[in-house]
Image (tube, rainbow, N blue to C red; front, side, top):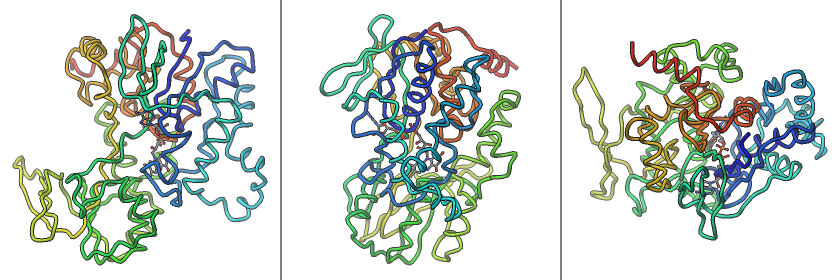
Length: 429
Ligand SMILES: Cc1cc2nc3c(=O)[nH]c(=O)nc-3n(C[C@H](O)[C@H](O)[C@H](O)COP(=O)(O)OP(=O)(O)OC[C@H]3O[C@@H](n4cnc5c(N)ncnc54)[C@H](O)[C@@H]3O)c2cc1C
Protein backbone atom coordinates (compact mmCIF):
# COMPACT_ATOMS: atom_id res chain seq x y z
CA UNK A 1 0.00 0.00 0.00
CA UNK A 2 1.07 3.59 -0.61
CA UNK A 3 2.08 4.97 2.80
CA UNK A 4 2.00 8.69 2.17
CA UNK A 5 0.20 10.48 -0.65
CA UNK A 6 1.07 14.13 -1.17
CA UNK A 7 -1.53 16.16 -3.05
CA UNK A 8 -0.37 19.26 -4.86
CA UNK A 9 -3.18 21.70 -4.00
CA UNK A 10 -5.85 21.52 -1.27
CA UNK A 11 -8.81 21.79 -3.63
CA UNK A 12 -11.81 19.63 -4.38
CA UNK A 13 -9.83 16.49 -5.23
CA UNK A 14 -7.57 16.62 -2.18
CA UNK A 15 -10.60 17.09 0.07
CA UNK A 16 -12.46 14.19 -1.59
CA UNK A 17 -9.52 11.79 -1.22
CA UNK A 18 -8.89 12.86 2.38
CA UNK A 19 -12.59 12.39 3.18
CA UNK A 20 -12.67 8.84 1.82
CA UNK A 21 -9.39 7.99 3.56
CA UNK A 22 -10.77 9.28 6.88
CA UNK A 23 -13.94 7.20 6.56
CA UNK A 24 -11.91 4.10 5.69
CA UNK A 25 -9.71 4.72 8.72
CA UNK A 26 -12.83 4.98 10.91
CA UNK A 27 -13.77 1.54 9.62
CA UNK A 28 -10.40 0.16 10.66
CA UNK A 29 -9.03 -0.08 7.11
CA UNK A 30 -5.39 0.86 6.56
CA UNK A 31 -5.13 3.86 4.18
CA UNK A 32 -2.35 6.16 3.03
CA UNK A 33 -1.60 9.28 5.03
CA UNK A 34 -2.87 12.23 2.97
CA UNK A 35 -0.90 15.50 2.97
CA UNK A 36 -2.06 18.44 0.87
CA UNK A 37 0.53 21.06 -0.01
CA UNK A 38 -1.29 24.33 -0.58
CA UNK A 39 0.04 27.78 -1.43
CA UNK A 40 -3.02 29.74 -0.26
CA UNK A 41 -5.81 27.97 1.65
CA UNK A 42 -8.22 25.06 1.26
CA UNK A 43 -10.48 25.60 -1.79
CA UNK A 44 -8.66 28.84 -2.63
CA UNK A 45 -9.51 28.61 -6.34
CA UNK A 46 -13.23 28.84 -5.53
CA UNK A 47 -12.92 32.16 -3.73
CA UNK A 48 -12.12 35.74 -4.64
CA UNK A 49 -8.35 36.21 -4.55
CA UNK A 50 -7.60 32.73 -5.91
CA UNK A 51 -7.55 34.18 -9.41
CA UNK A 52 -10.30 32.06 -11.00
CA UNK A 53 -13.52 33.69 -9.76
CA UNK A 54 -14.86 36.47 -7.57
CA UNK A 55 -16.66 33.80 -5.57
CA UNK A 56 -20.07 35.24 -6.44
CA UNK A 57 -20.73 33.25 -9.62
CA UNK A 58 -22.49 29.95 -9.49
CA UNK A 59 -21.34 26.38 -9.71
CA UNK A 60 -22.07 24.81 -13.11
CA UNK A 61 -22.61 21.24 -11.88
CA UNK A 62 -25.13 20.25 -9.23
CA UNK A 63 -23.79 20.58 -5.65
CA UNK A 64 -25.11 17.08 -5.02
CA UNK A 65 -22.09 16.02 -7.09
CA UNK A 66 -20.12 16.46 -3.89
CA UNK A 67 -17.06 14.73 -2.40
CA UNK A 68 -18.80 11.35 -2.15
CA UNK A 69 -20.75 11.35 -5.43
CA UNK A 70 -21.94 8.95 -6.92
CA UNK A 71 -21.99 7.09 -3.56
CA UNK A 72 -21.20 3.80 -5.23
CA UNK A 73 -17.90 2.90 -3.59
CA UNK A 74 -16.01 -0.01 -5.07
CA UNK A 75 -13.00 -0.15 -2.86
CA UNK A 76 -14.07 -2.46 -0.05
CA UNK A 77 -15.96 -5.57 -1.22
CA UNK A 78 -18.69 -6.47 1.29
CA UNK A 79 -18.47 -3.10 3.11
CA UNK A 80 -18.98 -0.54 0.34
CA UNK A 81 -22.54 0.21 1.48
CA UNK A 82 -21.28 1.05 4.97
CA UNK A 83 -18.55 3.25 3.46
CA UNK A 84 -21.11 5.17 1.39
CA UNK A 85 -23.27 5.67 4.49
CA UNK A 86 -20.31 7.19 6.27
CA UNK A 87 -19.49 9.37 3.25
CA UNK A 88 -23.07 10.71 3.36
CA UNK A 89 -22.11 12.45 6.61
CA UNK A 90 -19.79 14.61 4.49
CA UNK A 91 -22.30 15.33 1.72
CA UNK A 92 -23.47 18.74 0.51
CA UNK A 93 -26.82 18.11 2.17
CA UNK A 94 -25.22 17.17 5.49
CA UNK A 95 -23.27 20.43 5.30
CA UNK A 96 -26.52 22.38 4.81
CA UNK A 97 -28.19 20.49 7.65
CA UNK A 98 -25.14 21.08 9.86
CA UNK A 99 -25.20 24.82 9.15
CA UNK A 100 -28.99 25.18 9.45
CA UNK A 101 -29.70 25.98 5.80
CA UNK A 102 -31.10 22.78 4.37
CA UNK A 103 -34.82 23.68 4.41
CA UNK A 104 -34.18 27.10 2.90
CA UNK A 105 -32.12 25.57 0.06
CA UNK A 106 -34.92 23.10 -0.73
CA UNK A 107 -37.61 25.79 -0.53
CA UNK A 108 -35.67 28.03 -2.90
CA UNK A 109 -35.67 25.24 -5.48
CA UNK A 110 -32.17 23.84 -4.77
CA UNK A 111 -30.24 26.65 -6.46
CA UNK A 112 -26.64 26.18 -7.58
CA UNK A 113 -24.44 27.58 -4.79
CA UNK A 114 -21.98 30.37 -5.45
CA UNK A 115 -18.33 29.40 -5.77
CA UNK A 116 -17.78 30.95 -2.33
CA UNK A 117 -20.43 28.74 -0.73
CA UNK A 118 -18.93 25.73 -2.49
CA UNK A 119 -15.54 26.68 -1.03
CA UNK A 120 -17.15 26.86 2.43
CA UNK A 121 -18.54 23.36 1.92
CA UNK A 122 -15.10 22.01 0.91
CA UNK A 123 -13.55 23.69 3.95
CA UNK A 124 -16.19 22.18 6.21
CA UNK A 125 -15.33 18.70 4.89
CA UNK A 126 -11.59 19.38 5.24
CA UNK A 127 -12.06 20.52 8.85
CA UNK A 128 -14.37 17.63 9.70
CA UNK A 129 -11.88 15.01 8.52
CA UNK A 130 -8.81 16.91 9.72
CA UNK A 131 -7.13 17.28 6.33
CA UNK A 132 -3.41 17.73 6.91
CA UNK A 133 -2.45 20.87 4.98
CA UNK A 134 1.17 21.94 4.62
CA UNK A 135 1.41 25.64 3.75
CA UNK A 136 3.65 26.42 0.80
CA UNK A 137 3.81 26.78 -2.93
CA UNK A 138 5.33 23.81 -4.70
CA UNK A 139 8.11 25.18 -6.87
CA UNK A 140 9.87 21.95 -7.84
CA UNK A 141 9.25 18.19 -7.85
CA UNK A 142 12.21 15.83 -7.78
CA UNK A 143 12.93 12.20 -6.95
CA UNK A 144 14.79 10.64 -4.07
CA UNK A 145 15.07 6.91 -4.68
CA UNK A 146 11.53 5.53 -4.41
CA UNK A 147 9.99 8.82 -3.22
CA UNK A 148 8.83 12.08 -4.67
CA UNK A 149 10.09 15.27 -3.07
CA UNK A 150 7.90 18.38 -3.28
CA UNK A 151 9.98 21.50 -2.73
CA UNK A 152 8.36 24.66 -1.40
CA UNK A 153 9.99 27.95 -0.50
CA UNK A 154 10.05 26.82 3.17
CA UNK A 155 11.09 23.17 2.92
CA UNK A 156 10.45 19.82 1.29
CA UNK A 157 7.80 17.12 1.66
CA UNK A 158 8.61 13.52 0.85
CA UNK A 159 5.95 11.07 -0.24
CA UNK A 160 5.77 7.75 -2.03
CA UNK A 161 3.02 9.01 -4.35
CA UNK A 162 1.91 12.43 -5.60
CA UNK A 163 -1.38 13.64 -7.05
CA UNK A 164 -1.39 16.83 -9.14
CA UNK A 165 -4.59 18.90 -9.03
CA UNK A 166 -5.91 22.26 -10.18
CA UNK A 167 -6.34 24.00 -13.51
CA UNK A 168 -2.97 25.76 -13.51
CA UNK A 169 -2.06 29.38 -13.08
CA UNK A 170 -4.57 32.14 -13.89
CA UNK A 171 -1.93 34.77 -14.66
CA UNK A 172 -1.40 33.85 -18.33
CA UNK A 173 -1.85 36.63 -20.87
CA UNK A 174 -1.33 36.98 -24.59
CA UNK A 175 0.34 40.38 -23.99
CA UNK A 176 1.63 40.45 -20.40
CA UNK A 177 1.72 43.84 -18.74
CA UNK A 178 -0.38 45.70 -21.31
CA UNK A 179 -3.26 47.58 -19.62
CA UNK A 180 -5.73 46.61 -22.38
CA UNK A 181 -5.06 42.89 -21.94
CA UNK A 182 -6.18 41.10 -18.78
CA UNK A 183 -5.37 37.61 -17.53
CA UNK A 184 -8.12 35.69 -15.71
CA UNK A 185 -6.61 36.71 -12.37
CA UNK A 186 -6.40 40.39 -13.37
CA UNK A 187 -9.98 40.34 -14.59
CA UNK A 188 -11.29 39.01 -11.26
CA UNK A 189 -9.10 41.38 -9.31
CA UNK A 190 -10.57 44.29 -11.25
CA UNK A 191 -14.12 43.02 -10.74
CA UNK A 192 -13.54 42.56 -7.02
CA UNK A 193 -12.27 46.15 -6.75
CA UNK A 194 -15.71 47.25 -8.04
CA UNK A 195 -14.02 49.19 -10.82
CA UNK A 196 -16.32 49.44 -13.84
CA UNK A 197 -14.97 48.17 -17.18
CA UNK A 198 -15.77 50.70 -19.91
CA UNK A 199 -14.90 49.45 -23.40
CA UNK A 200 -16.50 49.27 -26.85
CA UNK A 201 -15.17 46.02 -28.24
CA UNK A 202 -14.15 43.33 -25.78
CA UNK A 203 -12.72 39.89 -26.62
CA UNK A 204 -12.74 36.88 -24.30
CA UNK A 205 -10.27 34.19 -25.36
CA UNK A 206 -11.39 30.65 -24.46
CA UNK A 207 -14.60 28.76 -23.78
CA UNK A 208 -16.00 26.61 -20.99
CA UNK A 209 -16.84 27.40 -17.38
CA UNK A 210 -14.05 29.94 -16.93
CA UNK A 211 -15.29 32.03 -19.85
CA UNK A 212 -18.92 31.53 -18.80
CA UNK A 213 -18.26 33.08 -15.38
CA UNK A 214 -16.41 35.99 -16.99
CA UNK A 215 -19.19 36.63 -19.51
CA UNK A 216 -21.70 36.64 -16.68
CA UNK A 217 -19.66 39.30 -14.92
CA UNK A 218 -18.97 41.34 -18.08
CA UNK A 219 -22.65 41.90 -18.79
CA UNK A 220 -22.80 44.07 -15.69
CA UNK A 221 -20.15 46.42 -17.14
CA UNK A 222 -20.31 49.06 -19.85
CA UNK A 223 -19.36 47.08 -22.96
CA UNK A 224 -20.84 47.28 -26.46
CA UNK A 225 -19.81 43.92 -27.92
CA UNK A 226 -18.18 40.83 -26.47
CA UNK A 227 -16.47 38.45 -28.87
CA UNK A 228 -15.74 34.95 -27.59
CA UNK A 229 -12.73 33.49 -29.40
CA UNK A 230 -12.46 29.68 -29.47
CA UNK A 231 -11.24 27.06 -31.94
CA UNK A 232 -14.65 25.39 -32.25
CA UNK A 233 -16.88 25.99 -35.29
CA UNK A 234 -19.48 27.69 -33.09
CA UNK A 235 -20.44 28.13 -29.43
CA UNK A 236 -21.89 24.71 -28.70
CA UNK A 237 -24.38 23.99 -25.94
CA UNK A 238 -23.15 21.24 -23.68
CA UNK A 239 -24.91 17.87 -24.11
CA UNK A 240 -26.69 17.42 -20.77
CA UNK A 241 -29.13 14.58 -21.29
CA UNK A 242 -29.22 11.57 -18.96
CA UNK A 243 -27.02 9.57 -21.32
CA UNK A 244 -24.37 12.27 -21.52
CA UNK A 245 -24.43 12.98 -17.79
CA UNK A 246 -24.19 9.27 -17.02
CA UNK A 247 -20.83 9.04 -18.81
CA UNK A 248 -19.51 11.51 -16.22
CA UNK A 249 -20.96 9.75 -13.16
CA UNK A 250 -20.35 6.19 -14.30
CA UNK A 251 -17.41 5.55 -16.61
CA UNK A 252 -18.05 1.77 -16.81
CA UNK A 253 -18.88 1.92 -20.53
CA UNK A 254 -16.23 4.53 -21.28
CA UNK A 255 -13.37 2.08 -21.67
CA UNK A 256 -15.38 0.18 -24.30
CA UNK A 257 -15.43 3.21 -26.61
CA UNK A 258 -12.70 3.84 -29.16
CA UNK A 259 -10.46 6.87 -28.58
CA UNK A 260 -12.24 8.66 -31.46
CA UNK A 261 -15.66 8.05 -29.83
CA UNK A 262 -14.35 9.28 -26.49
CA UNK A 263 -12.97 12.47 -28.03
CA UNK A 264 -16.33 13.02 -29.69
CA UNK A 265 -18.21 12.73 -26.38
CA UNK A 266 -15.75 15.06 -24.64
CA UNK A 267 -16.06 17.66 -27.41
CA UNK A 268 -19.86 17.68 -27.01
CA UNK A 269 -19.95 17.67 -23.24
CA UNK A 270 -16.80 19.16 -21.81
CA UNK A 271 -14.22 21.16 -23.75
CA UNK A 272 -15.09 24.76 -24.52
CA UNK A 273 -18.85 24.24 -24.43
CA UNK A 274 -21.41 26.26 -22.47
CA UNK A 275 -24.08 24.71 -20.27
CA UNK A 276 -27.72 25.10 -21.35
CA UNK A 277 -28.19 27.45 -18.35
CA UNK A 278 -25.41 29.69 -19.63
CA UNK A 279 -26.77 29.59 -23.17
CA UNK A 280 -30.22 30.64 -21.92
CA UNK A 281 -29.12 33.40 -19.63
CA UNK A 282 -26.10 34.83 -21.41
CA UNK A 283 -25.95 34.03 -25.06
CA UNK A 284 -29.39 35.48 -25.70
CA UNK A 285 -27.78 38.90 -25.15
CA UNK A 286 -27.16 40.39 -28.59
CA UNK A 287 -23.86 41.96 -27.52
CA UNK A 288 -22.21 38.57 -27.78
CA UNK A 289 -20.45 37.21 -30.88
CA UNK A 290 -18.28 34.21 -31.65
CA UNK A 291 -15.05 34.16 -33.62
CA UNK A 292 -13.50 30.84 -34.59
CA UNK A 293 -9.75 30.40 -34.41
CA UNK A 294 -6.64 29.90 -32.34
CA UNK A 295 -4.87 32.98 -31.08
CA UNK A 296 -1.40 33.11 -32.65
CA UNK A 297 -0.33 36.40 -31.07
CA UNK A 298 -1.42 39.88 -30.10
CA UNK A 299 0.15 43.32 -30.55
CA UNK A 300 -0.81 46.81 -29.44
CA UNK A 301 -1.28 49.31 -32.27
CA UNK A 302 -3.25 52.57 -32.67
CA UNK A 303 -4.84 52.31 -29.23
CA UNK A 304 -6.18 48.81 -29.92
CA UNK A 305 -5.06 45.25 -29.36
CA UNK A 306 -4.71 43.42 -32.65
CA UNK A 307 -5.19 39.69 -32.30
CA UNK A 308 -3.99 37.35 -35.03
CA UNK A 309 -6.18 34.27 -35.36
CA UNK A 310 -5.31 31.07 -37.17
CA UNK A 311 -7.90 28.77 -38.71
CA UNK A 312 -7.47 25.70 -40.86
CA UNK A 313 -9.59 25.57 -43.99
CA UNK A 314 -9.32 22.63 -46.38
CA UNK A 315 -5.87 21.83 -45.05
CA UNK A 316 -4.65 25.40 -45.51
CA UNK A 317 -3.74 27.69 -42.58
CA UNK A 318 -5.43 31.08 -42.76
CA UNK A 319 -4.53 34.09 -40.62
CA UNK A 320 -6.91 36.95 -39.86
CA UNK A 321 -6.37 40.04 -37.69
CA UNK A 322 -9.05 41.56 -35.42
CA UNK A 323 -8.91 44.72 -33.32
CA UNK A 324 -10.32 45.09 -29.77
CA UNK A 325 -10.33 47.75 -27.06
CA UNK A 326 -9.93 45.16 -24.31
CA UNK A 327 -8.84 41.53 -24.46
CA UNK A 328 -9.44 39.10 -21.59
CA UNK A 329 -7.27 36.05 -21.91
CA UNK A 330 -9.36 33.25 -20.44
CA UNK A 331 -7.21 30.45 -21.79
CA UNK A 332 -5.29 29.95 -18.53
CA UNK A 333 -6.53 26.45 -17.66
CA UNK A 334 -3.81 24.03 -18.67
CA UNK A 335 -3.67 20.39 -17.63
CA UNK A 336 0.10 20.35 -18.30
CA UNK A 337 0.79 23.29 -16.00
CA UNK A 338 2.90 21.17 -13.61
CA UNK A 339 5.49 20.10 -16.21
CA UNK A 340 7.82 23.10 -15.60
CA UNK A 341 7.97 22.05 -11.91
CA UNK A 342 9.60 18.71 -12.73
CA UNK A 343 13.32 18.49 -11.97
CA UNK A 344 15.58 16.84 -14.55
CA UNK A 345 15.61 13.45 -12.77
CA UNK A 346 11.81 13.37 -12.75
CA UNK A 347 11.61 14.43 -16.41
CA UNK A 348 14.10 11.73 -17.36
CA UNK A 349 12.12 9.05 -15.53
CA UNK A 350 8.83 10.03 -17.16
CA UNK A 351 10.32 10.35 -20.65
CA UNK A 352 11.97 6.93 -20.40
CA UNK A 353 8.79 5.26 -19.11
CA UNK A 354 6.58 6.98 -21.68
CA UNK A 355 9.02 6.48 -24.55
CA UNK A 356 9.34 10.10 -25.59
CA UNK A 357 8.76 13.76 -24.82
CA UNK A 358 5.89 14.59 -22.44
CA UNK A 359 3.16 15.68 -24.83
CA UNK A 360 -0.46 15.94 -23.77
CA UNK A 361 -1.45 12.96 -25.96
CA UNK A 362 1.33 10.74 -24.66
CA UNK A 363 0.53 11.55 -21.02
CA UNK A 364 -3.21 11.04 -21.49
CA UNK A 365 -2.71 7.69 -23.17
CA UNK A 366 -0.46 6.48 -20.36
CA UNK A 367 -3.04 7.02 -17.60
CA UNK A 368 -4.01 3.73 -15.99
CA UNK A 369 -7.08 2.53 -14.07
CA UNK A 370 -5.74 4.10 -10.87
CA UNK A 371 -5.46 7.53 -12.62
CA UNK A 372 -1.64 7.38 -12.37
CA UNK A 373 0.91 7.10 -15.16
CA UNK A 374 1.32 3.42 -15.94
CA UNK A 375 4.81 2.05 -15.63
CA UNK A 376 5.97 4.97 -13.48
CA UNK A 377 7.20 4.40 -9.95
CA UNK A 378 6.91 6.25 -7.57
CA UNK A 379 3.28 6.86 -8.51
CA UNK A 380 2.23 10.10 -10.15
CA UNK A 381 -1.56 10.52 -10.18
CA UNK A 382 -2.80 12.87 -12.90
CA UNK A 383 -6.61 12.94 -12.65
CA UNK A 384 -6.81 16.11 -14.74
CA UNK A 385 -5.37 14.17 -17.67
CA UNK A 386 -7.39 11.00 -17.10
CA UNK A 387 -10.59 11.99 -18.94
CA UNK A 388 -9.69 10.35 -22.22
CA UNK A 389 -8.55 6.99 -20.85
CA UNK A 390 -10.67 6.60 -17.72
CA UNK A 391 -13.80 8.76 -17.93
CA UNK A 392 -14.71 12.39 -18.57
CA UNK A 393 -15.81 12.98 -14.96
CA UNK A 394 -12.41 12.41 -13.34
CA UNK A 395 -10.84 15.81 -14.14
CA UNK A 396 -13.82 17.75 -12.72
CA UNK A 397 -16.40 17.47 -9.94
CA UNK A 398 -18.53 14.81 -11.61
CA UNK A 399 -17.41 11.69 -9.72
CA UNK A 400 -15.14 12.66 -6.83
CA UNK A 401 -16.28 9.56 -4.91
CA UNK A 402 -15.03 7.28 -7.70
CA UNK A 403 -11.86 9.30 -8.06
CA UNK A 404 -10.99 8.71 -4.40
CA UNK A 405 -11.64 4.97 -4.80
CA UNK A 406 -9.27 4.75 -7.73
CA UNK A 407 -6.52 6.72 -5.97
CA UNK A 408 -6.80 5.01 -2.60
CA UNK A 409 -7.12 1.59 -4.18
CA UNK A 410 -3.84 2.05 -6.08
CA UNK A 411 -0.87 -0.16 -5.33
CA UNK A 412 2.71 1.15 -5.44
CA UNK A 413 3.75 -1.24 -8.29
CA UNK A 414 3.83 0.03 -11.83
CA UNK A 415 2.28 -2.59 -14.09
CA UNK A 416 0.64 -2.07 -17.44
CA UNK A 417 -3.09 -1.87 -16.68
CA UNK A 418 -6.07 -3.18 -18.64
CA UNK A 419 -6.81 0.21 -20.13
CA UNK A 420 -3.28 0.79 -21.26
CA UNK A 421 -3.05 -2.63 -22.79
CA UNK A 422 -6.13 -1.65 -24.79
CA UNK A 423 -4.53 1.64 -25.83
CA UNK A 424 -1.36 -0.06 -26.93
CA UNK A 425 -3.61 -2.28 -29.08
CA UNK A 426 -5.39 0.76 -30.57
CA UNK A 427 -2.09 2.36 -31.42
CA UNK A 428 -0.79 -0.72 -33.11
CA UNK A 429 -3.90 -1.16 -35.31
C1 LIG B 1 -14.44 29.48 -12.62
C2 LIG B 1 -14.49 27.99 -12.65
C3 LIG B 1 -15.69 27.32 -12.48
C4 LIG B 1 -15.75 25.92 -12.51
N1 LIG B 1 -16.95 25.31 -12.33
C5 LIG B 1 -17.01 23.97 -12.37
C6 LIG B 1 -18.24 23.29 -12.13
O1 LIG B 1 -19.27 23.89 -11.92
N2 LIG B 1 -18.24 21.94 -12.16
C7 LIG B 1 -17.10 21.21 -12.41
O2 LIG B 1 -17.18 19.98 -12.42
N3 LIG B 1 -15.94 21.82 -12.61
C8 LIG B 1 -15.86 23.17 -12.61
N4 LIG B 1 -14.66 23.79 -12.81
C9 LIG B 1 -13.46 22.97 -13.04
C10 LIG B 1 -12.72 22.78 -11.70
O3 LIG B 1 -11.45 23.35 -11.81
C11 LIG B 1 -12.57 21.34 -11.36
O4 LIG B 1 -13.76 20.69 -11.47
C12 LIG B 1 -12.11 21.09 -9.90
O5 LIG B 1 -12.10 22.20 -9.10
C13 LIG B 1 -10.77 20.71 -9.86
O6 LIG B 1 -10.46 20.40 -8.51
P1 LIG B 1 -8.99 20.30 -8.12
O7 LIG B 1 -8.88 19.73 -6.76
O8 LIG B 1 -8.26 19.63 -9.24
O9 LIG B 1 -8.47 21.81 -8.14
P2 LIG B 1 -8.86 23.11 -7.32
O10 LIG B 1 -10.09 22.93 -6.53
O11 LIG B 1 -8.82 24.20 -8.31
O12 LIG B 1 -7.62 23.25 -6.31
C14 LIG B 1 -6.30 23.45 -6.73
C15 LIG B 1 -5.51 24.02 -5.56
O13 LIG B 1 -4.12 24.00 -5.88
C16 LIG B 1 -3.50 25.13 -5.30
N5 LIG B 1 -2.22 25.34 -6.03
C17 LIG B 1 -2.06 25.66 -7.33
N6 LIG B 1 -0.73 25.70 -7.64
C18 LIG B 1 -0.06 25.35 -6.51
C19 LIG B 1 1.31 25.18 -6.20
N7 LIG B 1 2.28 25.34 -7.11
N8 LIG B 1 1.64 24.82 -4.94
C20 LIG B 1 0.68 24.61 -4.00
N9 LIG B 1 -0.64 24.77 -4.24
C21 LIG B 1 -1.01 25.11 -5.49
C22 LIG B 1 -4.52 26.23 -5.49
O14 LIG B 1 -4.32 27.29 -4.59
C23 LIG B 1 -5.83 25.46 -5.24
O15 LIG B 1 -6.24 25.55 -3.90
C24 LIG B 1 -14.57 25.18 -12.76
C25 LIG B 1 -13.36 25.83 -12.91
C26 LIG B 1 -13.30 27.22 -12.87
C27 LIG B 1 -11.98 27.91 -13.04
